[in-house]
Length: 152
Image (tube, rainbow, N blue to C red; front, side, top):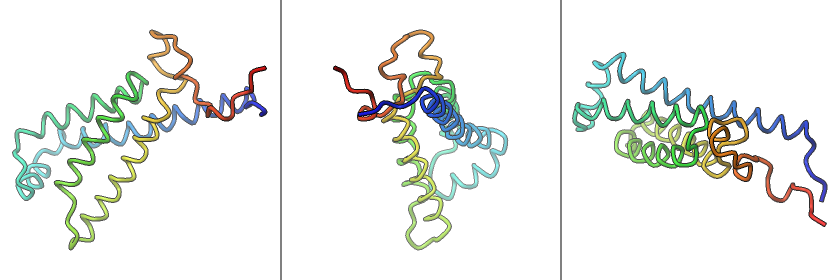
């Protein structure tokens, strides 16, 4: 089997890093929204019977997990935890079969969970902070195993 060229590996690494940044920036902006506009979030939480005091831990968790994903620090762990958190919170806050807007938000969150699961399955990529400390190229390589050159 023919391996992937160096140019394709670089493109894959850049695309992986961009995907990490885009996914993380979505969650970082959500966390910032929880902090910047607490009145609208308090109103939303009151309707959904979620206590107001959970706003700050939610914002902190979303921001820290997203930041870890963005820089490539413990990416698999952060992506898995954030995917579980998004599913749990989306199911509680958005799953309302009779409300088209809420179901749309629920499906949007499911799409984000899909992106997080892809990050979980592919790891941190080669452009990540963990590579500076760990130097483990096995997980850092985003090349699919079946595309690697065959060993003689």
